[in-house]
Image 1: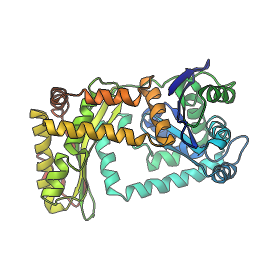
Image 2: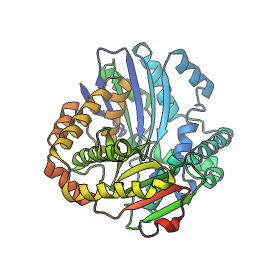
Image 3: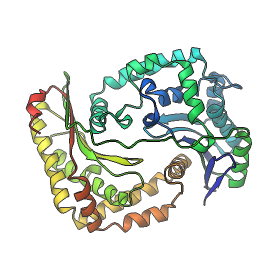
Image 4: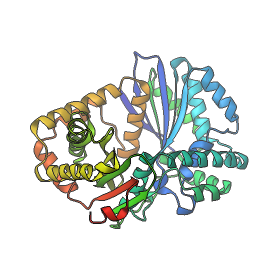
Length: 413
């Protein structure tokens, strides 16, 4: 059973009881990500993801790590463009410890200047590692071109320059402004009691109040159509796509079906045409992201330089074909079956359930059950998919390419 509560300080809490498991997962969703950072401190959310594990007013970073390890648990975090997530998964016998560690970490970090300097170097190494992977680079170049001049186009890691220049006091101010209860959701799933969890969270958040979701501006129309980074790689890596749907769009389920049929599975059009029938790529897939007020829909492929034109032609051909005629009845059935089954399988552990309900409450301010989401997917019709395909796939396209290719050979696209 999924239950929600809202505390007097604005903090939202959601739980899902799983009586047959021995674990409990807790997560804190902070409604702030790289989209919400001033340009001068781009990467601040990711900086905090690192720093919050370095120690609190009560525990050193080593003590936090030892407590989690001794309990056989897992504690980590991740940064996205519109949120930052911290989570811990432990045995139900250690639920109080897990919640205490998580809340202490999120609410009372020291943010010591010495720790900022240490993590600065760690993050710079992370950026270097990212830059060494052309598959990662092409996605970030594409996002930067698709949302030209807008914070959604920035890499959540930040840049070499902003990470080097961000000062400890700037990080502290960013934390104080955004890590407030009215901009957070605490989620829990597993062998738990809702009322006990809410009471425990309320006690730990006592004396903490205020905040709210960050003010955001929608992306303008500025969009680069082509961006090429020449690199001495064995393959050419490309992403081609368009702006998609916002996270609250009514037809987002139809877009999910469309995306799966296009390149989301082993039976999808692009996988079959590019890999299975022609052997032109080891990896080819479609993807989508949804944000406040906008979204993305794209296709990635990695191929030999000599095959770039052919692969691009196949991708563009399928985008055009689906935009013009939608998908088939068989593709609809396969896509819906996959999405429903994927959702069901993802709910077999407490961590996945915690992540789903926390994200849902943060983004939509309510949580649909599995049955409700499955019903929405099963209600998608061919006409729904055709309508969203015509709406989205006819939008201006952005192409990003990384590899041994001359920009002039692609300038006509």
